[in-house]
Length: 85
Image (cartoon, rainbow, N blue to C red; front, side):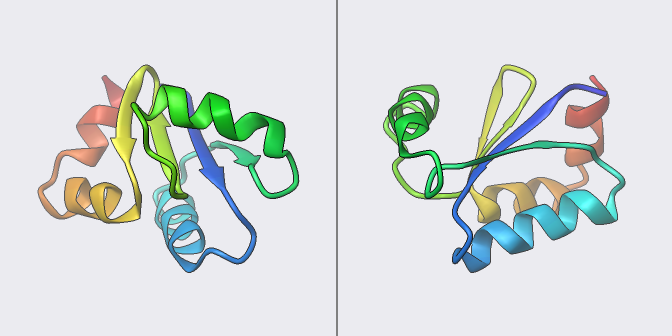
């Protein structure tokens, strides 16, 4: 399984929803809290091609996007393949 990283903020409902889906699927992920570590936000923006909102989700080198994008992959049956590839 590819490594999964998710940039989050503690008060973000979309962040909690994205993490919940990953946890339900048994996916281990690294969480980067940009609220507690604001020095990591420029890194997130660069990696996300200008994306400034949280969550920003990465599977390996692939930028998934945000929570809606993650759920769209799951709905379309593509998330498992991305995680396993």
